[in-house]
Amino acid sequence: MRLVIKRSQAEQVGIFGGHKGMKFLLACRVDLTPEESGLVTKYKAEHELLTHIKIGDDVKQSGFLFIKDLVAGKSYECKNVTELLQAEEEIKKGCENFKTLLTVMTSFGGEEVIEFSHPSKA
Image (cartoon, rainbow, N blue to C red; front, side, top):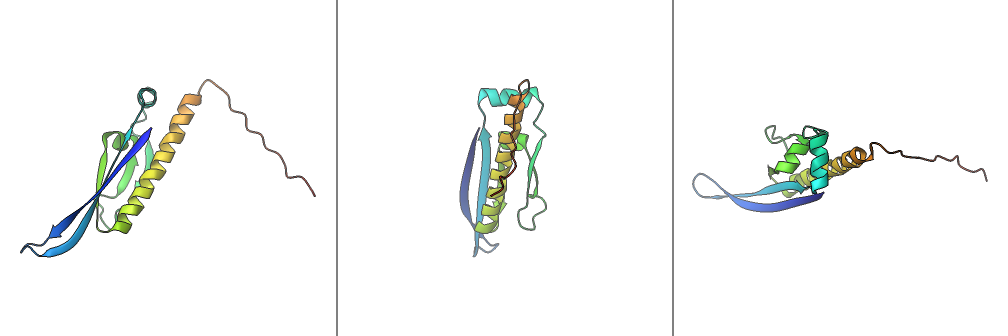
């Protein structure tokens, strides 16, 4: 899996042509290997929730991020760089969650051994 993030900016112009600042655009998508894509299809994981993204006070843009959103690509418009960076961090967390899901999907039929040891007394 490969996360592709694109950042851009555009000048905001008022009704009468005055400069109203900048808006920041964040676009993201994941490129899956054929094996990863096959796992998503096999387990019907398109609607698996990965994270929640909040873009300032914008209820329309804020919301849940699902696997299908990352595969199709998703865009966000942010008021400032801080909002953009916060959204980008949540997207990265969502990708970490996605990678964990893919790892678990590939592990069925096998076994995982986890060893726990107690701390030695000095």
